[in-house]
Length: 87
Image (cartoon, rainbow, N blue to C red; front, side, top):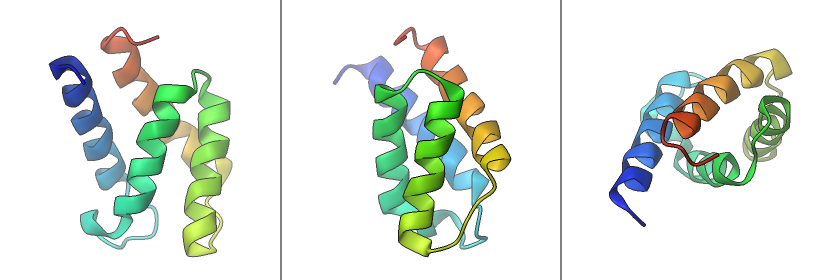
């Protein structure tokens, strides 16, 4: 993994930690954040990523996050990805 990829992943993690949809604090989502970062690398469309984010968090916490909230964060994550030139 190159330095740009590491920096991108760190930025993605920071965005997801700040998001904190269930108010558990930064440390409450380590597994989910790892899955979402993998999804960011695999997906390119905000609505696809938003649905994946929603499914990841719902699977673990058995709580539903409105798709609109997931879409907002998916745009932020994909913007980081685009700025690193991975798309």
